[in-house]
Image 1 (cartoon, one colour):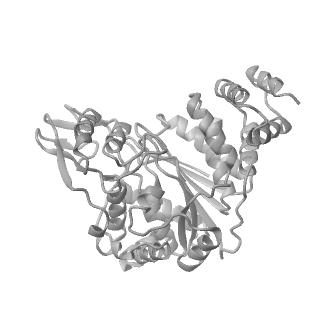
Image 2: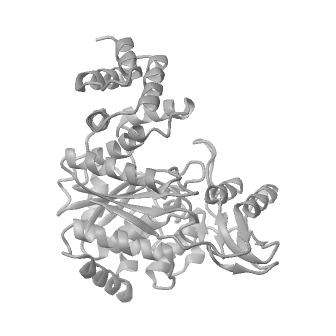
Image 3: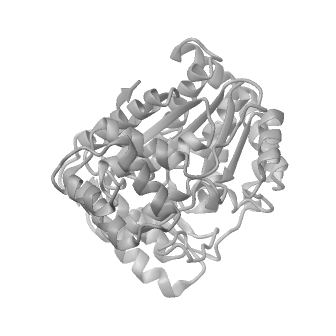
Length: 434
């Protein structure tokens, strides 16, 4: 088998066989196939696409390129949840403990933030003492003890994805539907969960800008899960504005804690409740969405969900007192308001620009090696459709390095579009794919 023939076959739009996909992936991981040939194939895939059989085979081959984690020592049905990324998407930090407090076993491996998309690990590490680098034995012990653990991916998990993603990043082929689906689902399959819940974002703050594209991606990933004999469900959700108020690590942890305390309402809480309800159904804790929502509300009202978060934090080496006093989280030295420059209604938000405004003051990374300041970020005071007056506060900037403040303020002002009439309201959850 020759790599040049495989490249040519895909350039002509033909489907690659099981053997050809395995030959390429195995050879690339072992560094027997050079980057220039891998780049040519990835570019051909970007132009010509892959059918469902090819995409599923590529996903399985990627998942099996490294360690396949066995979670059988964890009692019960193990559920996993993944978001395709966004701005102020703090759901995991609340969903995991909330679902676990009702009886689900949530065993999750998460990633770090890059560009405007925040990372769950970075948020958790803003909690004093919290360690995301648990070994597998400790990870499973924590899940058995409190029902939930969130850790970083192990070094030997899906090495093919690490190599391919780096290649896609420098060859401008990240936005291939087949390659996105294979990247996400290979990690989920290798992580060992019995059931997989996907939150597929679309909009100005997501990688998928159109709802139709997000729905197509959701269908592909659910089908991959079916072929791999893993029950998979996907919600297609709106990211045309920051999901919550907080954009930044410690600020987002504080907002998640406030939701579990029952102190905040809004889109973020609504999505947390919906995702948690689906997890309870998939874990067979509840037989219907209505039963699940009742159980979740009881857990919030009783304080059980907050206790579960505190227990998880403690088992990860963190300070559980942050659940009682969020002032124990890192705090910025200065808070600067950003105000509206005219009267009107908030018609549109360039949500990715809001995310980049947070990055510019140190809340995220432009490159993987960048350091994050856990204390800094933004607090969005207004939502889409809100009426504002000139001089009214749109957002608060939490800063330590004032040298980057002007860039953040300018980005925010450009990102929030104020017009003469309110926009048409959108749906938080547009589709559910099972």
